[in-house]
Length: 183
Image 1: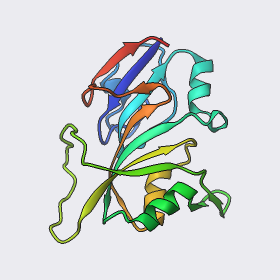
Image 2: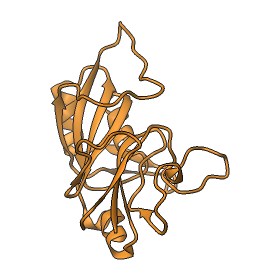
Image 3: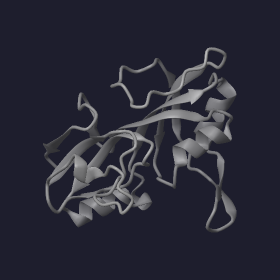
Image 4: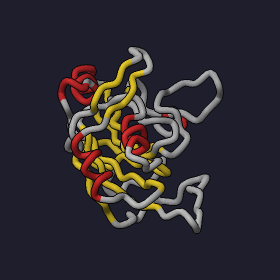
């Protein structure tokens, strides 16, 4: 079984939470499915759920280098130097190992602001600080990786939406909705 969910902002990417935060269980009432890879609490977009452990491992395990596509609203104007750095890979500190590792090269390009569902709460708007949108494709999945990458090149992330995982994409799926798909 395979389910695509458009996870809303501020929803925990698991089915239970002792702190009472919103979880996947508030949206998907199908038993025995689990997320194949995580999406941060403060990120939105595509989460693939499955009851197939092998498929879950293939999607989530970084060894398989499955492409994940994000639309990212950043604070500031993304210039050619910042895009080149993101494409080449950036050095990120690893808290556990107390070392830094370079990310794999990414595919990055500027995009026009996409048409998306409203976010609650909305992204803050500041007249004096421009923002821009990037499309970023990565093939690994380190903790808060896209946010850390954009911050490393001086472009803090304001909104992060995952739109594709491998061959599966969000399409017209609205925030909080899900659908069954064929494997």
